[in-house]
Image (cartoon, rainbow, N blue to C red; front, side):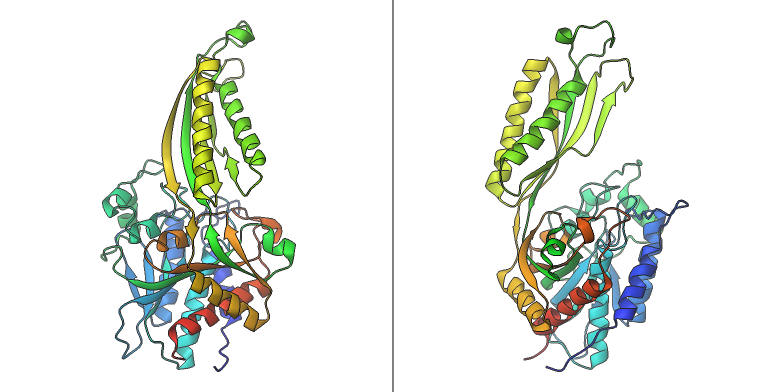
Length: 412
């Protein structure tokens, strides 16, 4: 097969251009789902899709698709590439955006080559992958895969009190297509690792075979506010102390598991939040992750039992709200093998690995063969302005994606 070279210069220029959209006055990057900065990023992406001569389609939850339907190709099922362009608050420029722009670059490269694929190829930018403004995260791909109703998604209320459906209309991205209109033949997602494994082992490519299950819960502990100076320690019903015990329990349990299990309390609010008042209320989130479904269930069960015992011993009332629950994902073995072979053919060191973060690929895996390609993240940093992947690795990942796509859609 003849060698086809993608435009590294174009890919990198677009990545940095998109990374400049949504900068605040202090230089921080934030493009939250359906806000004004997200609109500007979407407008930029759609402009590039049109420049590439792609058919642009937008569904009702704002998912953006750039579709190449070669003349004479009868198949309706497309090889779908993609990720997302929304960010966390104070983000880096690579998370999600790298996968979308690399998918576009691959399509443009193949179009320019004169070769005709056996089926359409499309690139997707899914809405609200990060879940910062609206819950749940990975919303657009979840709706596309049929795991969340479109009306339920559009009715989601954001952290700022807005409604997603209203905001999509406001920014002009409440599309006409019904979610799921594009039937994927397979799905591929190129992404930065967001972890330290590849860099630590000196590897260029990760062939992602599994993705951790995720359990999100919100815990509310109700105690009694009282004077911090006059209430004896043994007579307190301290919601703050009870929350601290939960945090310690989660950390110790994850460490004792001696496996890839992780547990995080990333959000905590105390009321009345005064220096001289015993907290009457503590509200915090619990993020449990494990690549093994049985172990994840065991962690959830252990937490529930601990909370029940804690309520009795501390004299508090505890309630739990389920925010999100996704089972671990096994990606398509044939696709993972194709990624490994493509990396080897390019001379890139590669390993099979698991993803600790959630991705749109885990939703797409519900309806089509799916897999992911990882490239290194320096120091494992992500969701942070110091997020960085060297250009040589960015190009390596895009080249592997190109070769995998060629293998899947070009005649042998």
